[in-house]
Image (tube, rainbow, N blue to C red):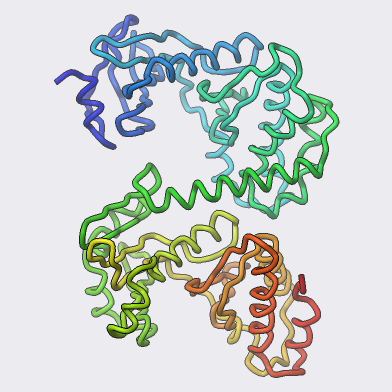
Length: 473
């Protein structure tokens, strides 16, 4: 079997050790950095006694993708935009193509820096400084007529105080060395700013101060905001789609009898739980043992998890449920939607449906356990106590996030909102809906609003306070 065939058939675990013969000499793979099965591989290699970055294109159309990478890198270099040095490219013996680049030892992406921040709250000085670095470099690209169409913090590398642009495949020269138009700038900036949680949107103009110092253009804030919303919605739909198919972030296994989606990074640690979730429920005291659902708490490698099984109560119940996605499926998507939007909810780890071909039966949802105190207990049942300032701020912020995202919870009992680590967390997402129009959103929101207020006695100080403060829309 040729090396190309071996790599094409290797799935997510390409062989190690592995040596690739290049015109520059043999390249010994030290580690695989990214694997798109059967399509593209990225590796740190040793070639000619130096550490290099090697990109291998192994699918049909390899020449086209390789050339796009090269064209993008050369466009950056032609405009003196910092990018790793291109050392070679071309076809491989036996098929496929390669790009060989300088390897920036100990470089970190801005995404890694972002993830390591103590706070990513809007306006945090360190977070603002990191974003300013990215915006300054984007401004220099725009001034040179270049755009990065896959604009996110992971495509910037910081190495020895120098910021580099990577992923030449997504770099395009739109105006041959001339500055981009205002509309082109807005469209490209929207891609970057839409990566941030929506609560950052109010600071967009402040963030752009750094950009405008390097590329003074006349931006339209209203149009930029609209573009950000469009980009964020596209990203959200693409992300939700990934949660249901086998990809880098998620492992999906389906058969005639079973469908299972799991966060790939959790696959090894919760493998035994996925194989038999009912065994864990049987071994632990239950948090809830109702007719429609059974909820239990278990520990896996020292981490507390919650298992929720959605039961089928009888043939009549099954006839209503078998033809549509299960409540576990719905809750899985709802939880990932909230996480994507920066709304606190226990991390969804896995979802399982029991099936007979296309027909669905019981289902399970596995999430992290949130050790918070529910708001009925935190605020008291009699409604005589008003929220402390910290809780007030977090509660009103949550409701504002839901309004902005046009999300209704569907069961706003105070026990479904938990106070934990300075945030109000949402749980029990079975009835959650994202509304695409005002006609469905307005009545759903009013039901949520009134249901939450009814957790406390009519006329009580807390009920009156909530009625005054919660958004009416």
